[in-house]
Every structure is written in C-alpha cells, then in structure tokens.
Image 1 (spheres, helix red, strand yellow):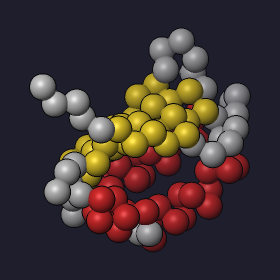
Image 2 (cartoon, rainbow, N blue to C red):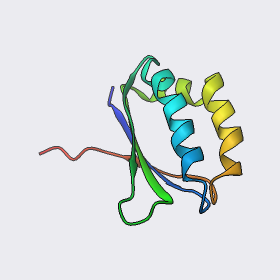
Image 3 (cartoon, rainbow, N blue to C red):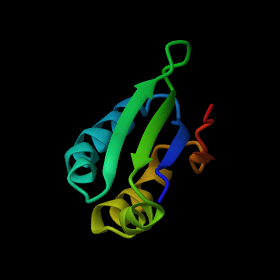
Length: 98
C-alpha cells in the first residue's frame, strides 16, 4: 500500500492565531500516537500570521480514514469554525518516482 500525504491549508480570522496554535498543541500528541501516523506538522506562513500549512503523512488510506473519525478530530472539526475563515483546503499529494 502507498503512503498518503496531505497538505492542509488553513486560514484563521485575524486575532485568532492563538486558537489555531492551541488546538494544534492539543492534537499533536494524540494524532502522533494514532496507528499509521507518520507526520503531523504545522507550519506558520512567514508572510501572513493568519495562514498555516499542516503536513500530514499516513502509512495507509485506512489509517487516515480511521484518523478522521477519532473523537479528538470530530471535536476539533466542531471547534474550528469559531476561529477559521472557512474550511481548510486539503490537497492529497502523490509522490513522483524517478
């Protein structure tokens, strides 16, 4: 099976940066402990404090599917509309092999 890589583009409402950072800090150890999680890393846009990019890598699609229905992700998804400008933009990536 092929690994699954995601680029998740996030934009928060001005003044709500800390809400995104707090949520990430709470989720990071929970997500890292999930079976099949290979990477869960948040990056801040150096040019715009309201934008973030989350890089996720999963061992399999089924591991990602299980992640999406965990209690902590369901709770996070319910909370994010209070501080984000809209839904995150998720891009599923495919590795280019030589």
